[in-house]
Structures are given as structure tokens and as C-alpha cells.
Image (cartoon, rainbow, N blue to C red):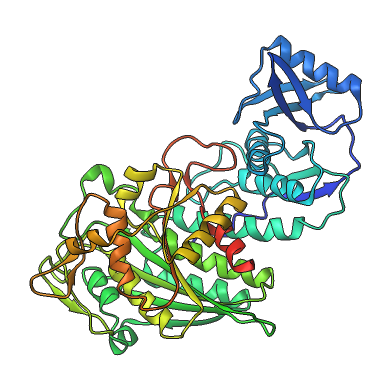
Length: 481
């Protein structure tokens, strides 16, 4: 099982530093002139760096990084990273992430990018810690992550502890999503969740297959029936003495998804280790809430199963009846995430939370509609819009989507109350309409991270290749509100 990766990069904040160091600076370009935005009060040094960048015709665009010999010490380097908009928090976060990635292999790096507020300092700290992430459980890294980063700031340090807690949670989510499904199945995932949540001060309850049957959690049992590893449901709770309000979070935890008898084509099956990203996000959101002592009761439900093909697997045409009496005809065994989330939503709403939010790598239709970086958010207007606002604050692209009533009829079944898959047009919205049937009158939000949870292309900003940990920062912002 993968060890905790975050912590390999030590974070310091200081106004005292020596220019003869490995230094990362921000640069912008206007009218073909490169300007260094560092806040460093040494015009000779700044002019030397700007001249070197001009000589190299260096880019100052987002995600750019140009490495120079440090004018004050030829054994050290200067990494000039593009800052698209110095007044934009996510641009600062991204530039810090690029600097951390460019500094891989260094023992130390000093980050000097001009800023004037606590929010800007926090963005730089988050960006460095998120950008330095590397998953090396199964191979020797070409370069180790930068060991220590000092962020140059004249501000009093009121943000680094929160930044480190957030980054630790995001990076641990990435660890779990990147882990081989051979090592992370529903049982080992539940064991790990119990261990880490307990260590963070959360209360934990793991439902075994016997308890799932006793609770009539038919979605988990049906989806997990084809696997040699039985399904699990994990309940986590953060309930501080000063709690104000109650939010429930539900995460999809399909540790591998073959599609079942509705088998996925080979080109779409190789990344299905990531289908448990929702559950990993909920687990680490709860851990972050505990570390930050968020004054709100938060209960998380992790819905874990492995969707495999075998003689015991569920079939298309099966009908299952949920604990609330709703019968569902299975017309697509690859629409399994909504089946396990329905169990989690029913359990969550039975405790009468003020609101319930589910998060899942749910539909390929999310990527068709919004691409690979923008998350789709649906649900009750107030909760949906609150999530989008929290995402804007976190710098995580998200878009409020409707749940058109006319699409609900595509879920109609002739033999059951509904079927689990409907129209492929608006498929992300149809999945949301399915889940809506299991929340009753509870205010609800649904977050589809199918594309944004897993970066299939090159790293950018503070986002690595493969697992991204997307929307954890949004959920922490939301429960902190």
C-alpha cells in the first residue's frame, strides 16, 4: 500500500534569503519586454536576469519555465516561470507549481514571486506543495521532488499550516487514485480508510458484506457480486464540539471498473483504477476538515466495490429493489457508479443532514460536455451554486449544469420503477436525474469529475500527469464556509 507522499517537500516562509541560491522568480511579458515580478529589492540582479531572458527570447507564458545560471553564484540556478496574471490567485498557484516541478532534483529552492495579501501567499504555498508531488511507489524517480522550498514573503505567516493540510489531503488523494488496483481493492481500501481516518481523529464504521445485506444496500452488493473481493461501505464522521450545521458527503469508490457484462472497449479500460477518485476525495476531505478543525459536522460515506465479470456478476435485465422501495432494472452494467451512490445517498439522508453532496467519476458524457478540466455540478440550486462558488475560490474550474425534467422519461422501465441508464444525449444530466430519486427533500449537490480527476496528458501548473486530486480544495472551502 502506498506510503504518504506529501511531506517530502518541506515548506518555509521567510523574508530573509540570500540571492546566491537556487531561486525561482516570476516573469511577465508585455510589448515583447520580459519583466521579473519578484519583489526582490536588488535592481542589478533583476536586470541581469531580465537581460538573460531577453537574450534567450524566453517565454513568459503560463506553464513556461526557463532555467538560467544564477548571476550571483554559477553553481546555482534561476528558474524563471511565467505568471499569466500576477493579480490572479490561480495564476500564482500555477506558477509556483511550475517552479516546483522545474526544481525537481534540487535539495532546496527559494521561491520569490511578488504578492501582497495572505490569499496570494496561500496560493503560492499551495502551488509549490501540489506541484512538487510525485508518485514513485512502483518505480525509481528520475529526479526526486525538491526537498525544501522557502517562499519569500514580508507577510506574517498565517497560511502555511492550512496550505500544508490542504496539500497533504490533495496529494494523498492522488496517491490512492494512482495506486494499482491489484493493491487497492474494496477491502484494502476500507482498511486503509479506517486506519488513516482514525489516526486523524474521525470516528469510523466499516460495513462488511454481511452488514450490507442487513441494511439492504443492494446497489453495492449487485455491483460487487462479480468480484472475488467483496464490497464495503465506510462511514466517517467529524463532529467537533462547536459544530454548526451538518453536511454529508458521498463518494464513488469503484476500485476497478471493467464495465461488467457491458464490457468496456480496451481503450477505455486502462485508466479504471481512477474510478474510486470520489471516495478518495471524500476520505481526505474529512481528514483535512479534522486537521483544520472545521466547525461543522461532516459525515462521509465511501461506497466501495469492484465491477468485474464472472459467473456471479450481476446481469443486464436484473432488477434490484433499494431500501426505500425503489426498483431499478439494470440495462447497463457499466452504469454502476450511480447504483452504489444510491446506497450511499439513502444512508446519508437517513441521518437528516442539512445537505448531501456526492462526488464521482460518473459519466463519459461529462467529458463530452465540459472537457477534461471542467467539473460538472448539478443538484438543488442553492447547493449546486454554492459548490461552484467554492470551486471559483479554490481555482478549480466547475460549471453549474441543469437537470431537465424531460430527460427523466428516458429512465422509465416497463418492469421496474426506473432503469439505471437512459438517453446518451445529456448523459451526465440523466445520471444526475437518477441520483435525484434517492435524496428525497434533502438539499443536494452532485459533482461529476470523470474527466478532471485524471490528467491523461502532460503535467501543467500544479497538476501532475494521472491523478489530480481535483475538487478536494473545493469541498474543504465549501464545508469551511
